[in-house]
Length: 292
Image (cartoon, rainbow, N blue to C red; front, side, top):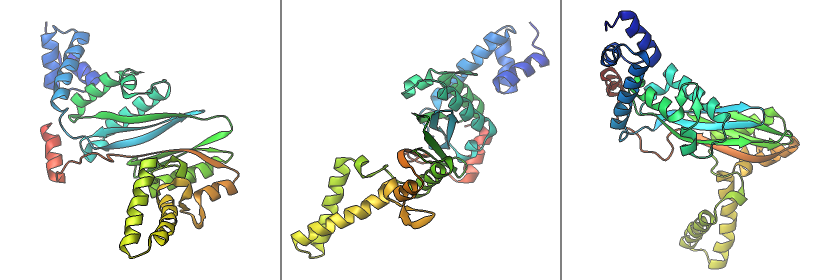
């Protein structure tokens, strides 16, 4: 069967694959568009598998809200160059909105959720073939609230940091202020009750040793530890932190002054805890050109 330019164009627009790949797929499948798409998808899977060992610690985080339900998610790419790609951003929007409508609780469940472009896992595989980098849905959390609660959302640096908060009894502006606080000040926990016992115990041990090394008697060292633990809480606990817009108030006090209470915080910083690529920009661009 003759493979016409219009057929190649149609498959290229549908798949996003290169012209020669589309022509070969159509030739292999005797012009059958559906089979050619499957051929390209299978080829995409092969390309994707080669990229599994590569590091994807860049990307974007985003938040989607509908009524009393919200989702925060992080999708990774290998380079910051790709994270600015319009198709990559659109992929996050499509995945985020699909997961928002789902009841997925794990990454395994999320990858099986249907989007307008197929299952999440298949959509990502297709985009790996199209963009030419390892891409992955790293993490997500679906958060719900009651009618008398309010979401606060804040994205920093175009989505390099995302913060989602839930407040009771306050308004959206206050909730956004708290989300901004979480994004900027990097709290690890919501409040002192949320700090794991082992983390607190380790900090007590460190501070006691510091006090003893300063030559303080044991009983004085113990009192110093308690004071330093309070300072520790102000650094790592959202509601204990000084409010960024008014350092005389804690976040908890600011919210209570506005008739509310902070119930939940989720903060994602893209690539946190992951190994980063060590390449310069010129190499990054050349890799894009070469399709590596």
